[in-house]
Image 1 (cartoon, rainbow, N blue to C red):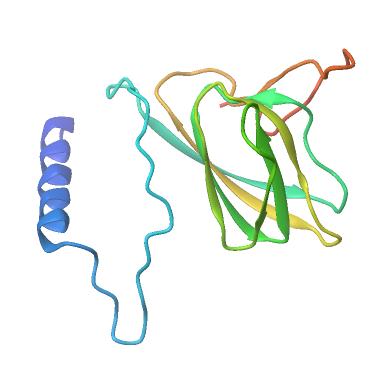
Image 2: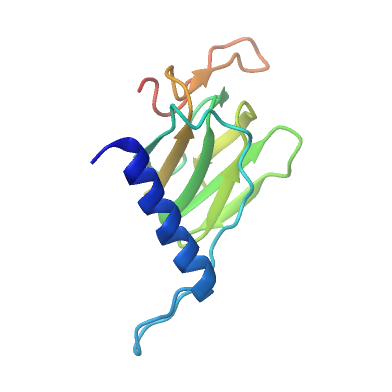
Length: 150
């Protein structure tokens, strides 16, 4: 199936979902909106999505870094403490999600508890390149962040 036909089918499916409203849950389940975030303008001809599992032992985390792509985080277990420059430091327990805009300086990304923490990081990109770029710490030491390449 060529790209135009695939795109048309996706648009038709999206239209059907929007027309039907919120997805209906199975009789014994439920559906809840967890995150709704406008995305930055992106090149629709080069879109990709990548999902990474990030594991932090207790009292460990990443150095200061930035992500050139939009990122959605979902905490699977434990508690992740995160701070993007200009925003407050926030603790996200298991089951919570957060959004990071492209090129935000990620000053804090660490395990905020005494048990291992697991995070799913979903990168939404429209270009090739590293997914995480280490930045110098305020003291001048190099930082290190999760996923370095695509």
